[in-house]
Length: 51
Image 1 (cartoon, rainbow, N blue to C red):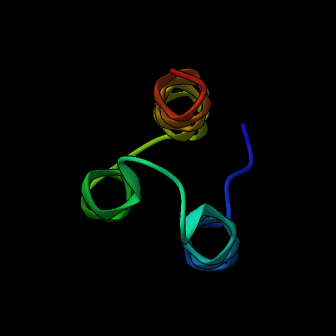
Image 2: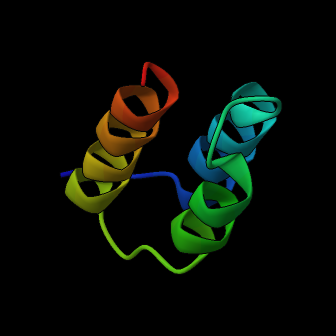
């Protein structure tokens, strides 16, 4: 699996601004180690924002 931690994290953090739980999300995404983990964090962020 190819994962670009710098650009992937940067854009994920940028587009999460203003969503519910985005502060926690940005902290967690900076500590993530795999693309799969990032995908799960993104899914959770959007699930939580819809509530």
